[in-house]
Length: 259
Image (tube, rainbow, N blue to C red; front, side):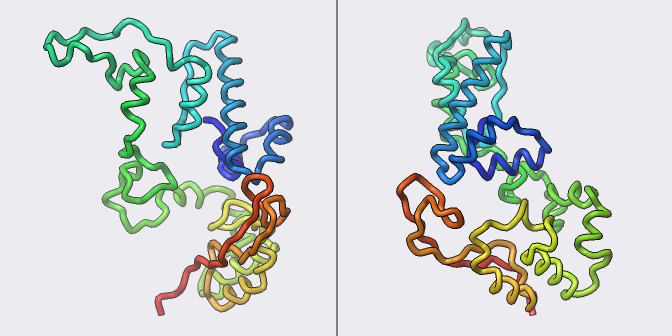
């Protein structure tokens, strides 16, 4: 599974509790603000990993695309694997209209270049754990009202005592909920049900507004401040290619009681 983006990479290693070699951290950290450079690094590093595996005698490589195949196509193309063919592993049809058939999905290794070309526009694959709830990946027709089904069942059981200590042993009012949101924004607790890490540095500029909103039961789960022409290298607001500028509108995404 190649590195596709800095944030995605961090989420993956946090979720899997993976130890990343220091040389890899040192290489990717300076690129984290430029998505294209991170993806290019992921391709180069992925090629290096694959070549080392093949040089070591591995006969098969298994790629996880996560429905983002572009980097993997580049890796296998640059390794020369797209051009390797072998004799047909199935009996050809005798009918005239199928005499030229040279690939079937189940035997994609017969002609990977043709398979990649024929399937690159397919969009019917499950979208995974963070995708749309209507995706067949959830397979949950009988429990549509359970909310974050694929997430919370395991999440509830992990570090339960630690969470009760941070979030409160009971939850009996909106004030109890509001306090958890405010404590997270203020930095007095580090783990939070609706966030995968600590707040971004840019959030410091709107932290007072966030605290005011959450104290008044406007429970925010996503936000960003207004930015007008910050350099892409700015330590708080910067991202994207070098010599660029960042412009963004402020927004708040939040839970609001129906009343």
